[in-house]
Length: 447
Ligand code: ADP
Image (cartoon, rainbow, N blue to C red; front, side, top):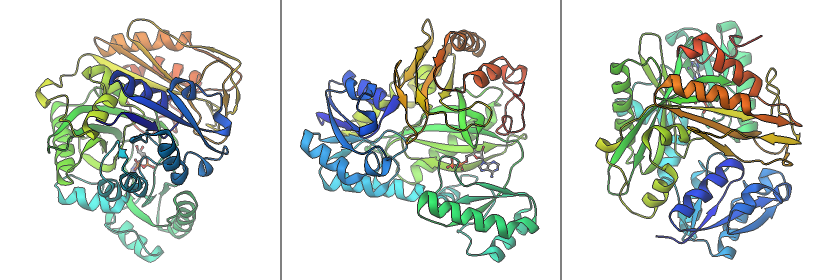
């Protein structure tokens, strides 16, 4: 086993990883930018290394500086968290070259799943149903129009290198296609340095259900059941839960079997997630695979009782998976909400100082926070402040606990998603477990 883990991230996930390392007796090195000198994740770790200026490009996204920090601090492993360099296959390969254990899958797996058209082809070949659409990125408006005519409008244009819900565009009919493709190409180029775009059928009001998978280097692959992540804004998740409510047993079995088949087909090692859209008839379609720890991993931890970060560390050290499929038995229900520093109506970031912060606690309540009272929310990073996770013996109890915990939260100084999350938690359709991915944008939670 390696001894010292450099945590190449910030905020709540850096703190979560430090905690995971502690449970295994591993030393930790935090990294930070000039904007994060006083950040809680810096104080949590055994030692900390300054990377550089606030912009992520010059700090958390700078592979050279991270590798130097690892060398200088004597780290022998790197945990990338989520976001930043977590799905950058070149960084994973550079870690291996520098004799650092990258806590995640192989560079090849990251590379294959990071190119979304390629991921669709690989998963399709493994028998996983995929959203109807193009097998390759489209070269021009004519090619896009041909595919759109085949699969039928509306369609959605997506960046081949996409992520974070960025740069997707719904296209209603052929007259709007050429302009939308030009915009999508430009956006993809500026966000991901790769302007390739592909076409998918746009599904009306689907659910987003994903399956957590985990593989080890002995070739064992298990799933840790599903998460429902339909409540989204800007194609980004706000609320996640496990198990998925009102998911019939047949669909659930189909999803977990497809996820295992997909992960096996690429010899997947470590934690990963296969994301699917599920339609009203229970049909499901592979969207993409995330080759890293998810933001929403705590709901899976709460219902399965397993520590996914500790398992990531063990597997990366070459140990077998600490759980077998037959021991992964979900208990009760867990719901997570994401509290972002953003305007709950426009969803624009709300940077600034947190002048007051009260976080909830109590039976079945878990908080993963990247901030404390006095923290300053920077314009440079994702504005996630903290995640609130409620666990109960059933969904009703989890919801009651969530509602009380949301009421107990106080955040002053920045605007947050808390008012919206309270509305969602109280909404009859949500309480019934009747959700789909377009609810927020359709205004279901207004008022
Ligand atoms: P990203 O990698 O940017 O997160 P995803 O492919 O995972 O993009 O999609 C994110 C979200 O966008 C989905 O959860 C869903 O809400 C919406 N979405 C993506 N593809 C489609 C589609 N074909 N039809 C309808 N909604 C979609």
